[in-house]
Length: 111
Image (tube, rainbow, N blue to C red):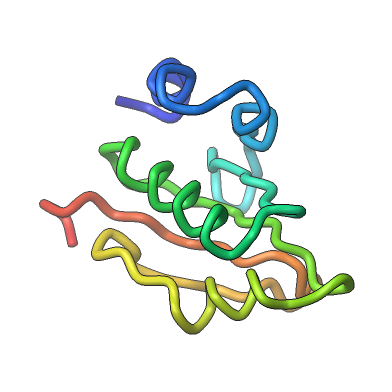
């Protein structure tokens, strides 16, 4: 399954407003990755949403989480210090943008 195929699965699990928060992106530096915007969600909503994304995609991928930091940092703090999923192989803070965190996701059989 690739990221594009994952969107078909996402649409069966996520509501329309949640689907609007997801975007497939491509970068010369890191290739194809998913971008999820969790602005406006509670910590528990963001945690559930991100966990579901990680668990639906069954291959290695990058997940750029846009959580913001100007109007509070509770989601940023939760992702960087409390959030756990066995498929997370790496977590990187964007040096030029404190409002995003990049997660490297590996399937269980590769971790």
